[in-house]
Length: 128
Image (cartoon, rainbow, N blue to C red; front, side, top):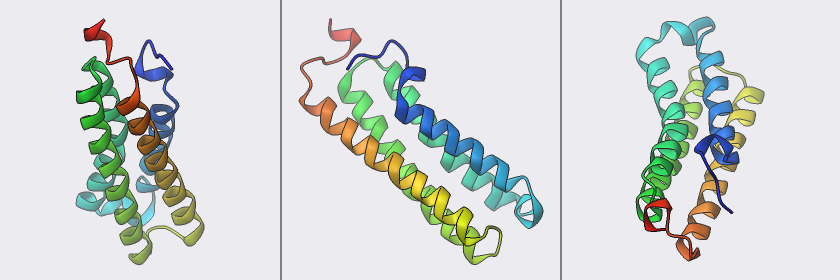
């Protein structure tokens, strides 16, 4: 599995989609007026895709894996914040379930990719 750029990676594409969905739900109703929380969940969701891309651009598996772990952590942070959004009445159960399931799926895919990179003979572009 060789990618020329991070935009080709399905995990990055899924993270981008989740980030946009979070942006959409935080732009409406009471959620849009809770500025600190709105900005916090947007940052956590955006951090997933940003850390995948930053790690990829480091051109070495060790650093990439480090950034993937950070992205995976941001998935957990996003899921935790979705629980708060549900508890505060900012989102309904269906929205919560869909977004939480997406974040969980991304997290599992990141974990699988980390496992692949740890055993890959390709160590990154800077090692060719």
